[in-house]
Length: 205
Image 1 (tube, rainbow, N blue to C red):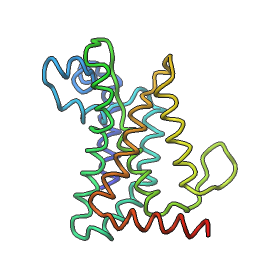
Image 2 (cartoon, rainbow, N blue to C red; image 1 turned 45 degrees about the vertical axis):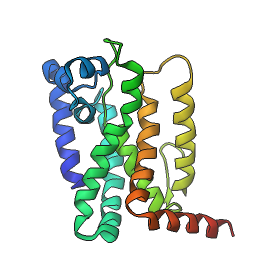
Image 3 (cartoon, rainbow, N blue to C red; image 1 turned 180 degrees about the horizontal axis):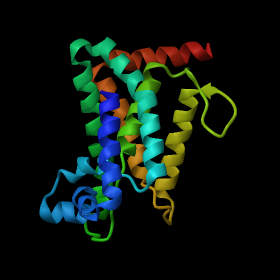
């Protein structure tokens, strides 16, 4: 399923790079969403990306961690694992845009796009299951526990989403997508949260 999501997202994103009408129809514009009641935009924006680099990074991370989370979900949800994985991904994209909608639904010029909310949720779900798997984030030439990356990512996203000025990155979507991934998984499988805490406690003991 991860590969299918990556292929569909890549295809639509590449088409939208040269098709402005398609971009306008799918992009998350909170004002247009409210006025026209086009609520599908909460999800459709996840099929779009600002440029090829944005697309490449998101799809690489999604492919890397998505298969991992699919495997974990298959283990805890059984036959419903694939459905729950898709539900997690899509609901995270929508949830990540709620704060943006509340803040900008009276601003006609504001647009947001990208699958980062869903991708962040997938990464943080992987952290819940295996917080101390070692990863290397390019260009840092060292391996470190994934949970440390997660803590740093949350702090950075929160700080950037609350500072004045803009770097044209929706850090709120990253932050809330990450939180949604954690909450979603624990809500449906509380045992995963308990196992995460046990792993952290054991690591420090």
